Amino acid sequence: MDDRLSQRLHGLLDRIEAWLPPAPEAADWSRDVAAIWQRHPLGGQLVPVAARDAVRLDDLVGVDRQREALLANTRAFLAGRPANHALLWGARGSGKSSMVRALLNTLAPEGLRLIQVDRHDLAGLPALVAQLRDTEHRFIVYCDDLSFEGHDDAYKALKSVLDGTLTGPPENVLLYATSNRRHLLPESLADNADTRLVGDELHHGDAVEEKISLSDRFGLWLAFHPFNQDSYLEACRHWVAHLGGGDAWNEAAREAALRYATLRGARSGRAAWQFACQWVGSGVG
Image (tube, rainbow, N blue to C red):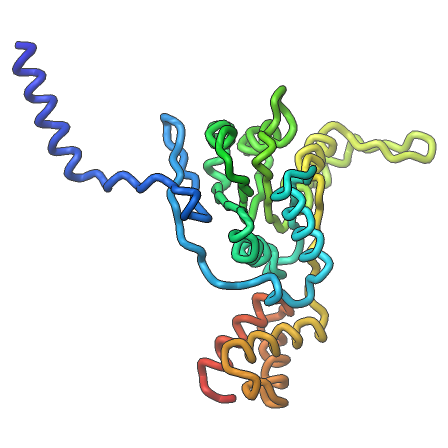
């Protein structure tokens, strides 16, 4: 009976294995510079990925202060000096995610490695950090477009890794995140109901303090604001010249770029890139 059951189980496993995708190749950090963390019930795995594009830090227009601050922080980290976890927050399309990708493209030859973690996989973040602790490379663990709803407990895993455990993150790991929200969590009018004035000081209630405590664990805050017209046009000029050559940017392109921003209702680095693709791709210039 036991032999027959064993044979049936082996046959079942053979049939199931034919439907399973092949196991991903393990990351080789001497060759791979980026990976995605995929959580599963037994822990998680790192899936190496190629760089999405060749954008460089010099390509980012209108965010010079943010670029220099993040570059200095990351270079300090690569040199083994003290560095801060970083939160890049602000207007949509203003270059937050592009800056992290450009940072990898620029600093990968200097030893930087990047691992992206989806918000839904944050529960596996402690397992990932533990896996990286004993490696010789230096890693930025990156969460893109990070935000949480009021009932979402995934942020507790992030808080714990940032500054909530006895050991803290290893010295070869930093966390960078981008978000449209400065405090990552939604803020409602009801949260401020317990705010009170004590003398000349404003004291927040527990709900507000809980929400601030997450973003407060990032030592470097970089704010990204909507572009003014000059910054937007400079970004358009850069990308049009990049895609179509220096002669592609002219007065007609400038006027078209202004119309594009008016129709989109936004002036941003993303809008500038999208306009450049449309202008150069159409062959009008």
